[in-house]
Length: 373
Image 1 (spheres, rainbow, N blue to C red):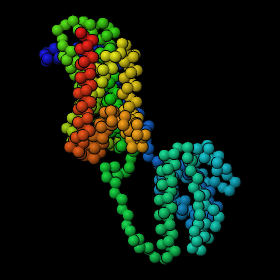
Image 2: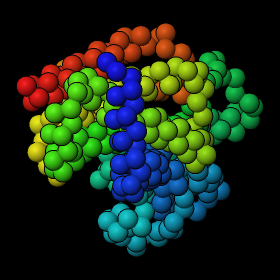
Image 3: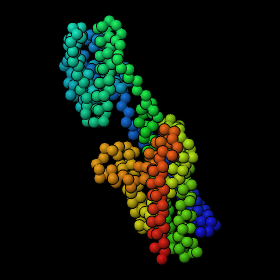
Image 4: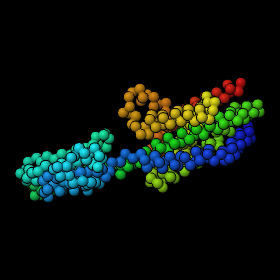
């Protein structure tokens, strides 16, 4: 393999890319824009849920319970529903996502040492949000019970078990911290596959691919020369994405940057190799774009653990996820970025990325060699 020929092809590709503002925008601008859009749009945090309250007791104790819900920051008081209010209409119109109903005699039951029942009506159309709200409400009521018992006893209760949870790596339990590393893997896969697929097919459409084949260039030199510029541009895009994640979402890289670079480098090699494979089976840029989008975007979103937990999928889909490189890259990214780990705990994931990159490059080389012969 001649380094001079490889660099010549790479230089030609860079010049061609620089003359195509649309390609540069796709490679550098789109990843950052997608990070911003997805980072702000995809959020699983449940806060400030609209709450309506029907307080028929109007006592100090009922007002204290309502204050416990509102002060938790999980609920915002939006409506004070009287006895004649249509609670079903409140939920249907989304004016409230939950309704707290406190019956008359609530304080009297508490004063008598009896169980006082309250009701929480929750909009279950969004099952994830409803499940979270039920958990928040249970915790708030449990804490209120402790305070009520303490007041009834007239002393501070001695709790036999002290429960002090500590959350590592994401103490505030912000979903953004979990989603942004997955976004990086998704965006890099999409842009890397499309960049190489469109670049090679563009040569076919313009008729310059045949001219390259009749030169003294070997298939390996052509592949490396084609991949090298887009590998460098994709690494630059990674830097921009990581910087944007730090500035916009506060997601800092806690682990070694060298580990992050090594994992990203191998992941990009596999993605670029897959892009070459897509270009070898496509006859037009439109076809390459469609095939690249479907084959890279859908698995990276649905089968990588980016949004949907793999352990909750059917067994057949769980088996299928083992062939998705983004699954392993997301594990490494979350370990390096969020946990401050090196590559050592994730050597199996790294080994698969190496295997995937090798297989994709081999297939791309075989396809281009067969077409040449």
